[in-house]
Image 1 (cartoon, rainbow, N blue to C red):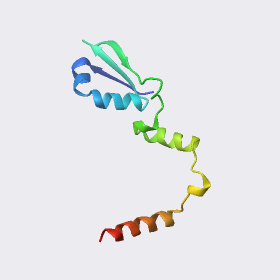
Image 2 (cartoon, helix red, strand yellow; image 1 turned 135 degrees about the vertical axis):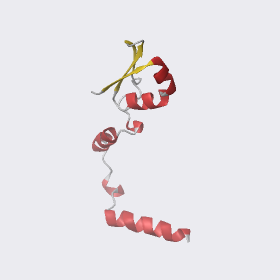
Image 3 (cartoon, rainbow, N blue to C red; image 1 turned 90 degrees about the vertical axis):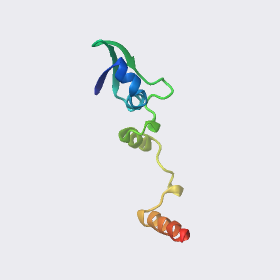
Image 4 (cartoon, rainbow, N blue to C red; image 1 turned 60 degrees about the vertical axis):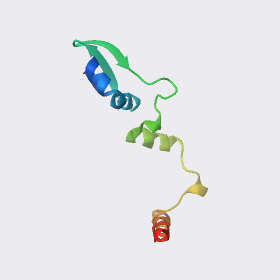
Length: 90
């Protein structure tokens, strides 16, 4: 696991980014004058959430939640639907 260590001022200025990193599974440690004082971790309800935008988390989620056969479409079908949608814009 990758660890990110930041000081309090930097954490204050980058809080949103640090939260996203923690949600993606990265360990975030906040230090006061170089001494680690706090670790930023996701709550149990969000731990491992694919909503974090982490590519690996999304792929893992998709493996454990496969698309049902009736909802699967080929690349050709998807491309055709995109082209039809674009054509309707004109």
